[in-house]
Length: 317
Length: 320
Image 1 (tube, rainbow over the protein chains, first blue to last red):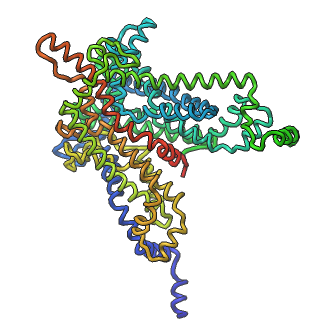
Image 2 (cartoon, rainbow over the protein chains, first blue to last red; image 1 turned 30 degrees about the vertical axis):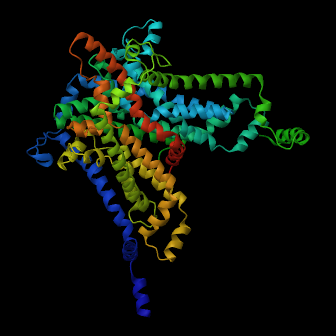
Image 3 (cartoon, chains in turn purple, green; image 1 turned 180 degrees about the horizontal axis):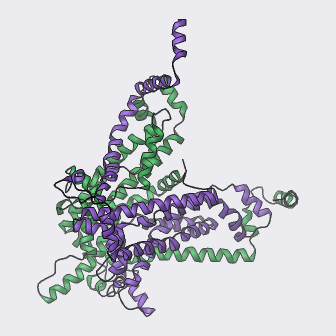
């Protein structure tokens, strides 16, 4: 018995940890069994594609496959940047998402603050119910609605614009593309995006309101000194996420809103990647462009998170 | 708040409150100054404007869908149907491509949601258990996919290599698990399933799987509803996977059929001039009816789940 005790104490820390692990595996094998399929999913559909990005540095051809194709170094990146279209694409992508961020970020906050003041339950619930709804409409339908209501022949919005002296078809105008894109996005998502701020407002300590009231604060002062500080951490997190996705602006809507007339502003990196990759089958170039986009995006996200942590003390992690 | 103002305010309000009825009125309403009242007018004007901006296009679409082809084509409909008919809906329901797309979308939404929810629970539940070896690394691996993704072409190459191109699998498997949903489910399991339950189940000799099936899942119905609807509505509304992976029209989901009809404006015209005008008018009307028909399924579920969705958003917003 004493020998066994000695042997056990003589075990190194590492060995002990290994035995507890083995015991853990034996006892909870079912948990690991559950993990097999999902982990396989993440490996096959998320991590292998990441590894496939290596073809951005190769001259990919189907015969030799991903690993057998000859190396090309940065040739495809150079080819992309040598093309004058590249800078148009980058500019279009950045302008579209910056416009979307500047216009779309404050509006849900304002709506949430306003809704929070409303005491008439029926009105509040109606506004919420109606303004959440467009979030659940598909992109195809939203774009179809835009095409129809801005159609000079059919749509009522064309009449409204005509009243202000704009008679052309807005969707064929490259100068209007960004506004159409951004404001229809706000139409679709502002109400729903307000939910997260409503939740943050609901979490504010009621005693703060009580104190503000006793100090004789007006409603506006209450918003400034209680509501805004209360939702600040949420605002920062949402802001980081939006800035971090500046380059990741969606393919779906831009592609649907595109037509030959507005292409000078509506062609963004995502739609270009689709065209050269799947329509022209230039896999290596398309992958290089996509990789460039993802890397810029990741750097932006990390940078914003770091700055935010230093300035406000709030970050994603 | 200083102590002085607090005591003064208490002295002033306490006796007053006692004199009035025992049930105290909402003090914010009593205290409104003229400036506050003006501010509230502004709040109501702002929200009403927003409400109308959201509502008017929706009403216009619905009103148009019930109008006559000539009225729609002439742009004469605003918020109320003109020359009320169901002709638009009859045309939609007689179109085989649309019905096939509807059926396909229903299939993708139901099967895709089942697969997605099952896989999400299968990864989120083990990850919610602290005793899992390698838990932190696995969570990191899941979250990293939110920051960086393989990209369009590299993912396409995997799907092609697996022989899934132009099959129904391509609509269900490649985007089966969302990192966001895993995060939501994991947070829910960690915060809502008390550790005591697991200890009790263990004493009764229940295995991990048994515990998950008989205790955790029945307690997680709100969570399952939230993620099922996120996946379901996402699947119903997406056209991207179909656009890149599918070639055969008989596999097209509704959204891709809609894109061809509504955005690309592909429709058959008549042969003679009168027929062409008629066909054009009918095609215009059909678009409105089609928008309504394809959005109805989502709008039917939405009110029941709006509350759950709010919870889901909140669950996800809790950092963890």
